[in-house]
Amino acid sequence: MIQMYHVHMSYSSDAPVLVDITMRIGKAEFAFVTGPSGAGKTSLLRLIMLSEACESGQLLLFGQNVARIKARHIYKVRRRIGMVFQDFKLLPLSTVGENVAVALEVMGRSRREVRKRVRSVLRLVGLEHKINSTPPRLSGGEQQRVAIARAMVSDPPILLADEPTGNLDAELSIEIDGLLSDIAARGTTVLVATHDMAWVDRTQRRVIRLERGRVVAGGLPE
Image (tube, rainbow, N blue to C red):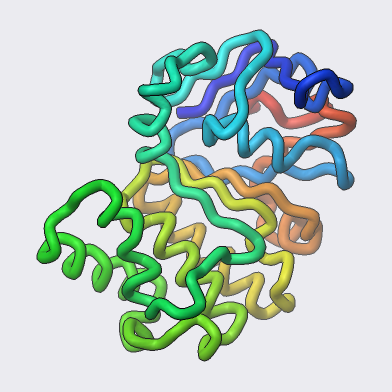
């Protein structure tokens, strides 16, 4: 589902951010990306999301090499990738339902389809009863679940999450892990960048470790 071969990336004239990255992640796999601050975890996710471009190497998503994709086609790939952020990025004055609906509305889906899909994905994350609440009235764990629902509402084959438990306590981290595990079990490839080593150690999933922009462990499946 995600394949990278000898990928290099840097920001303008700065030192390289990602160096000779080779890794493969399969369909419905749930994997972690770990490493110290500045190792390149967020940059790796941004590269997969096509928010940044490769300097060299190959990046294959869904079997297509998108390393040199034309700008006008990027949105087609991004629509197939969900992204969850540490700080949620929810619209505070909009309801939960409206926050989740945004992605589908941008895609021009009908109102009926939007309503049906929003309720379905909120049911998946256990928040259908909060559809008319606004984010400030939710707990941190509930806000993160809304963010996950928003990322999943278009049923993307790939879900990326950048420090999704960074602002949550241990109990809520376990809750988010269970939710992401259920999503992977439904066939979605889940890639999570995290500092939360207690979460990583507890689940015993595959770990891709970065140091100074390089993959030092776990890049290829055993």
